[in-house]
Image (cartoon, rainbow, N blue to C red):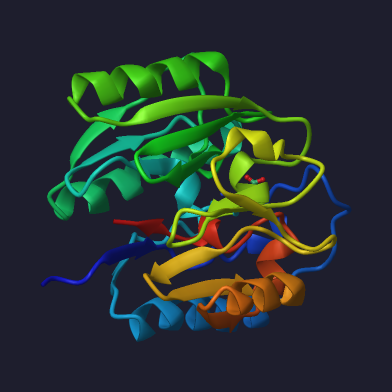
Length: 255
Ligand code: CIR
């Protein structure tokens, strides 16, 4: 069977100017960022994924975080978002071009609604959607509308966020559907099965396949927890992206 497809976008030359809203700004090492990005892409290739690169956007500092620009709803349907940060809206069109090239049917969110893909955490057929600084009520309403229009059987559960950038910053599903989350941003009673990651660790992991999980090197406690649950852990250092509030999931759109 055909392997899964991962969409990525090379870091912009002004990556260091990416938005920072919850942590102090620190210097980004561009060369190291490029190396870490290569390692990230290699982790997918190592699990049999086919890589598709969105055309680079050299002056769009946050364009490497493609996850925020589109939400894949099924193997053949995706929705292009309207990111909450104005500076990021120009990122969307080129991502749409690549998704269309891969044969996806695309829907588009319209003004005034906003939604960042990083706010969508999928667990089975449920999409938990953070009502965050970036994603508003109209964005969530439009996502529900698109799902209905496309005739997809997906539930949308809106989640008011207390802190943090996106819902996905603090929660992600393991291949078996167990949600990893970090406290205090998340109320775990939202989810069916859930496990809190150790304090100071990120819950933002990416399932590479049914038995393999990508974990950022900055979260050794999460890596240990995931390994202890019987998964093979692939650690990737993403320090330079974390400096501008990126995490593992935001660097890709997974089909
Ligand atoms: C931003 O603030 O938009 C970027 N600097 C980081 C986006 C991270 N995206 C994500 O977690 N999905």
